[in-house]
Length: 221
Image 1: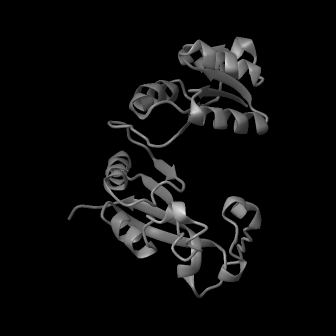
Image 2 (image 1 turned 135 degrees about the vertical axis):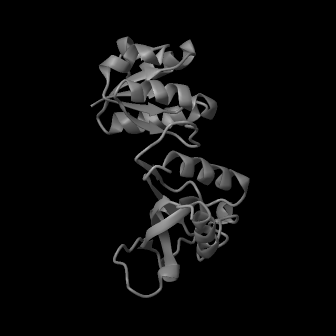
């Protein structure tokens, strides 16, 4: 598939690596000439490295948008208008546009105004019979020394209460268990040490790592 990658900053670099690894034919767009030169060195064809992303819209089937959040509305709006499938790196900003479904994975665990602001924004996007699918990653029962960067993660009950302020939760699916006896014990190589068991037992949903929530708009009485 021909994919347009818009934005070649820190996160854009990661997206380029993944897209090339998936075998996509990548078009790359960035306003900085040095970033386009970098993309060419990474294997992007020189004819597919453009300063104006709009020059590539007629040549691709999908767009991967990794630009600053305040540009998402203009860039994604143009890509959607061109009939492209779009992936937009968080945080999303799409005021005034309505969606049938919004999917967000692993980005709403943190407490505070940022989470509430994004819940409110997404609720507005799907208010006309749309759906919101999100995941919550529960680090609360994991080894605190190993997972210290996630010390400000909400407890599952707190997250669900916050989610319920903006959406009706239709279904919740606990998945991906990781039992205490198989916890990683070394901070900097924790990923290779993790042993994930995806056979979900009926009991003990609070021990789940990931929760998937299928949500609908709240209906005003």
